Length: 199
Figure 1 (cartoon, rainbow, N blue to C red):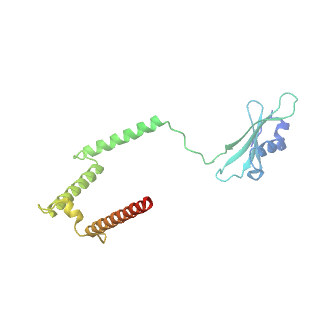
Figure 2 (figure 1 turned 180 degrees about the vertical axis):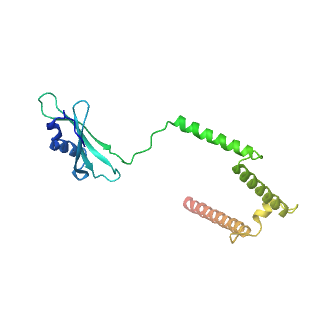
Figure 3 (figure 1 turned 45 degrees about the vertical axis):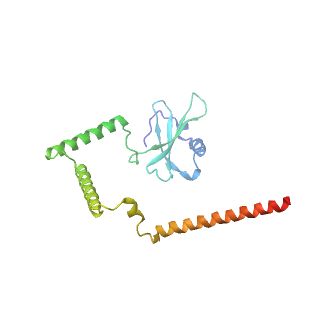
């Protein structure tokens, strides 16, 4: 990089000071060799070093150094800055502007759909077709039911996943009856025991 005539040679040569400042914020392995300098308008100098961090191609470690009167050089700022051709994020667009662009695009789509003659978007047509198919399926299910059939009879008729519901109900009822008989027998035994103790 080119230097200005009034650039301070002591600032340009303060590489050791700049490297020490960089090592306080980043590992030494991320700092490459010196990559020139840039004289600033206020008389300070920005020393640049190649960056070895992954994901930042074309960026440089930049250390801005200044000197007041006859004092020793001192570090003003340490940062990672993009060079020419560096990969940058797109400019930030406020949410209100993005929302306005989205709404304008939706209005254009609606106008285009209205110009086609039916006034419906392709999505609306797909929704209508799905509703028609669902109505047809429901009508077919109703036709399959005889007038004398009841919902409860249909739910409990035959097997469900290989299990006979009616048989299952009978076995549960028998188990409940057996449990009741066992409880009654146990209660009788306890009563007999109490009578023996009183005698």
